[in-house]
Length: 502
Image (tube, rainbow, N blue to C red):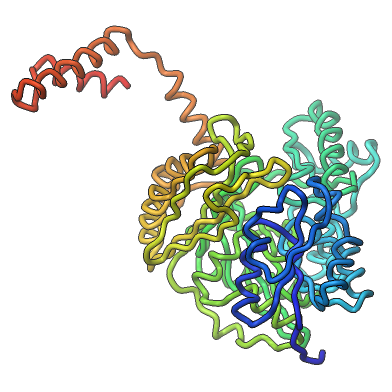
């Protein structure tokens, strides 16, 4: 592949990832082109790019997912490369092929590779051929209800029903019993058709108490491939990651090396070029099973950047320009620990329902080891039309404990007023004993909320509540009279009992 420098990069995305890519391009001296929908006219990525062009109305199918309109902007603006970010068209083989046919470089893998590894069942087949263990299940997409029933009986319950073209938890259902299968199939198919335009599904055996661990890979067009270690992604709600970290507190050095080697072997087998991520489930006995490959930049890529010191977006661009990887595997090291919290415009106490609206006040945390990849500003109106991710808060430390304490501090400083966010949820998780100990799995969030529900439902005696109120009033009166701050014995006893019971 001949090396060449791009003249201009079109960023085919929005929000924090578009801002992230624009910043990397600016540091490389590359002019950028933003695209936006009518709902995103005031968006931060529109303000930061060198040029910006309207794609269409707010719905993504009429704007960000319109391949023809994105390519028209690329041609008219003189952009010779397109970075898709994640989501939208990032794993769309048709879009990558259209870029190739138009003479525009797609900053990502080749279209045929996306078709192979982006479709979940073909990726599973490739993994088997490369000697990578997979979760027992089907290796073909299933579009017939009778075939689904037969395969489900063969695999056994409980099992996971997954969209063949899916990702991000869409079209995914846990099926505990045979009688639950028909309704789960109907819902999964409907969701998959809406999200991906493909309602085919496949089945996997459900692994009990799994950890979700992924391996970041990079490969150039000259036959060199490396892994950049792992990210722990087990803290999820509705199969969507909310907290990630690196290194994983669960992996041993031997398992880390093995999973990295498996990932590179699969990359070589697929002839993969550019950045990608291989996702694994790891059971309680530390046996890894390949799940799928994301043929794009991941949302959680900053934690890898923090512990390796490498800029993944710049490396993507350089690989797309034909450059060789600037390092060998043995030169890459994990240093320290990084934790990322995805800050969503969602209400954790209302089942993570979206919370669009105007941000009336904003205070972003800072200080040593704190990074905030954001697409918002004070006065910004969070639209209802898209994924509600606002920013990604990352804390780095020399150890996991250092990173955890720094993240607690950063979350406490982060203030977003006017809408609900997931920041209060992070306060809970970051102080939870199981998270602090690194002893959790993909069911952790459900358990945390079950514990919170039990606390909220705990009955409180009227007498205890009355004692607390009287104690508070007596304390206030004592302060006004200048008496001893300790209050009366009755006040102390009442307060102690109230605290114990509440």
